[in-house]
Image (cartoon, rainbow, N blue to C red; front, side):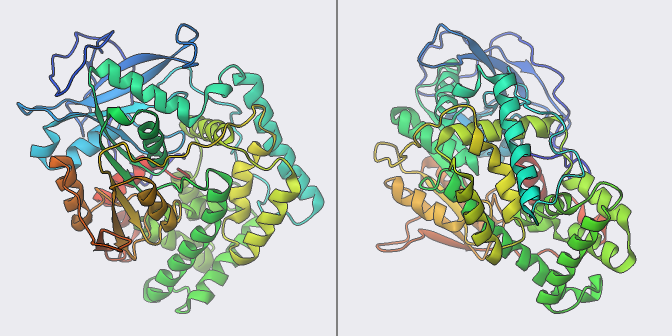
Length: 525
């Protein structure tokens, strides 16, 4: 969850505030009377002029409905067709990602005739963004220059442990009354509060990244309320959350090597060498250099890793990252690196909020090792094979080692009580590796798995791949799923989009479907 204003196409104006207006009269199939009908007000942006907003109240503790409330911020693109297919809730992931702009994006990306049949609903989950209360455990926690992520001494490791523990302690001191209820199960129960407020007997759901786990948990808790379920770039439900993060370490290293290979292939543009191993070695020399002298006074090794990590999520960022890499290595241009850090990785207040929710949910959802030697041994073992971001990822999650609230048991999402669902997964996804999509498809009876063969991006539907989107449109239209036949791991296979072409920075910022989507999905989620 980072500040990325310099690289993203604007997808809408900043939220000015959520206010109430006259209740909507939009109809939906299979409705049930809402206890307190939502009051929608116009919140149109240049990109999404028909966007509306509202709020709904949910109990902080769903086992105590009359206790302390939380307020959830919602957005909507209302249906315009005579016949509605009801609400389609959309979520960009996280945990900690704001979903208010997702409604506009999804509605504008689907075929007009199809989008017109749905009320597309975005939302900020509890603790996030415009929902209240919103978490911010320790402002400036990611302020540069942070310690090198890879500890070269016991003292350096102790510094990292103390730093992570200070974040956990600050969360407990500042938000102690909220932390027991910052978890995926509580967020899933919030979705059912939203369903009731919408007056719908059933909802459809479309989630990316962590949003796939949230959707699967909702379906497990409320199978009778699920109409259609789309999961894109799937969290492995059997690895929540420690094992999933270890899996990321290796997958991101592979994507970093893919980036180096792409730079080598385009040596005529970047002049960093035609051998991928030589390019990768040059990147690590750059890392050594900024450890000795942070670029622009703000980019040390931790910030450098954060700057290049988005390339593991979306290869559309490769041209800009490669140009920055070349400018530093070939010309000693520190300012280019500092600017790229500001655009890709600098954490603003929204990012602080996103990380606070990320930590709160992941640390509460499931047990994490409480013995630091387990973290150390697992991290060094992974680092020896995959050094790009292993220690960075460990410190990102290390507050869970001393989290002030006891963990819950993960939800077993296995489900044979919901309608058939649609699952998208790229074979080389780093943030949610391929095995997670296969596992989820086996857990959800009757589901169909659509694979992007050779794809490495995280978040693949509505991102410019017409083959994938064909399956999405068919499913959302009438529930049609592909069938791969008996014994097939994938029910449909689509080829990956072509790799990006090298381009000057100005052209690398050109709007594409993928760039808009990945601006909304953010990183780490």
